[in-house]
Length: 409
Image 1 (cartoon, rainbow, N blue to C red):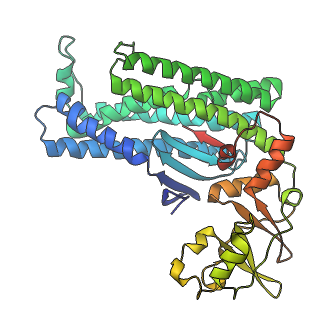
Image 2 (cartoon, rainbow, N blue to C red; image 1 turned 30 degrees about the vertical axis):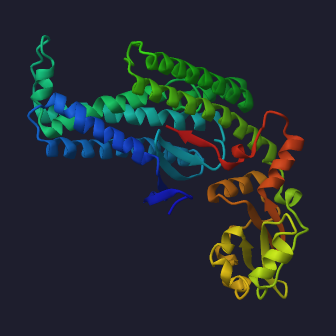
Image 3 (cartoon, rainbow, N blue to C red; image 1 turned 120 degrees about the vertical axis):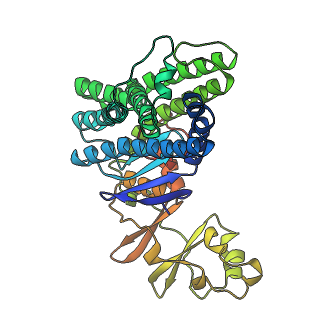
């Protein structure tokens, strides 16, 4: 498995490829619309089996194209010194997850621009292959559909993949953060001003402006009006408004993430970690743990130690490993997460890096280890508290701390 709720497909060049469950929604919609609408309209003579087969192939190849788009981000980013450990494919396309912001505006520019260029190259490449496979076509201006009907299955598939990849590339060139074009805009402002925060604020506002335009256009379409290029229809308008809402949220969150990184970048874990907490014995009964430690205190996870040796952690999640009827007879060591399976940090690690680990693994706390001994616990709420005291009103909510910088595309 990848992250919680994601399926790990494998890895390419050391970069993990995850699939979010939401991808199934758009995968089904693309397949259904092609099999039940587009391909039968282009080829009334096709059997339903052929239409569905080509529709499934088109959906698979489309998301393979999206993966190529994201891989281009990741590989160029890696060459420019940006650590990207995984890519996630989801309902709106894909994300290449960065550990931290690019080191320079040039790295940002090339990493951002390569994604849309990859999609454009794929799009025109598919159209070239379609022409190569089909041979010369005579298009009658009075009946352009006849040219589509003359295409074979392979040429039809390529003819659909070409324009859709070109549209993907052009859409991502829109200069609004966090789209690739918005990152290009941010890189240019960053290079001109030398101020990453200012560049991010302006690019984020451009992204929010574009998102609001999409939402307004979607609303107009939902009300029955026809919009040039987008057309009309309630469902199409709803999708457009939903995409706009998502981009608006991502633009604002991306700016707040930068503020978080700047605020925590030079703060060591030692400064934020808790040193006063209850440590428990591995032979302690679960019933006793709950009655005497878990319920009376605000501590949700307990280090397990035997004669000063750190053995692991036991938390609310671990308690679900056995039925409540077994709590009086089960000891902590039987359900705890051993230290070998824990994600740990050192006291001198940057708090921003620790925050990334919390988000990537969907954890609430990290054991802090020094010289093979447990010296503290870093909890998500400790970081939230510190930010509320030091980072100002622009940072709001624990939800912002669950995500790290990403390259949507």
